[in-house]
Length: 119
Picture 1 (tube, rainbow, N blue to C red):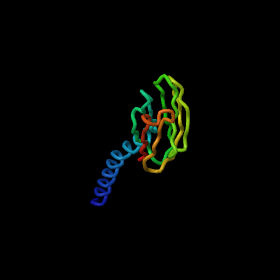
Picture 2 (picture 1 turned 30 degrees about the vertical axis):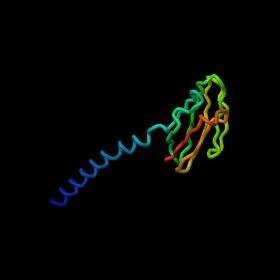
Picture 3 (picture 1 turned 30 degrees about the horizontal axis):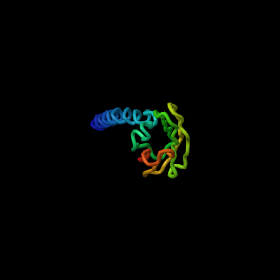
Picture 4 (picture 1 turned 45 degrees about the vertical axis):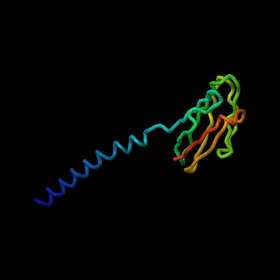
């Protein structure tokens, strides 16, 4: 009889632990992948530092709000893509190792600079 009560108690404890853990784990898995966004304003990237997920592929959107073209370029990321005035581009990246990756606007290298950190 004592063994049955103990087993019932252990089963209830296990069920409570399972019920507390599973929804949190499922919520983390269900979160959409990060889709970072950059704006080009006054020949600068806004924001000039972004954090992206390491180890997964992701989509970066770059919108040019200036009246002149710009080029999203990065030697670290091996990417180069022109962004026409008032237009938006998509750059597919990853999976990246953890670390910092510099990017710049080729037409305004003195002001259009940024860093992407993969974590």
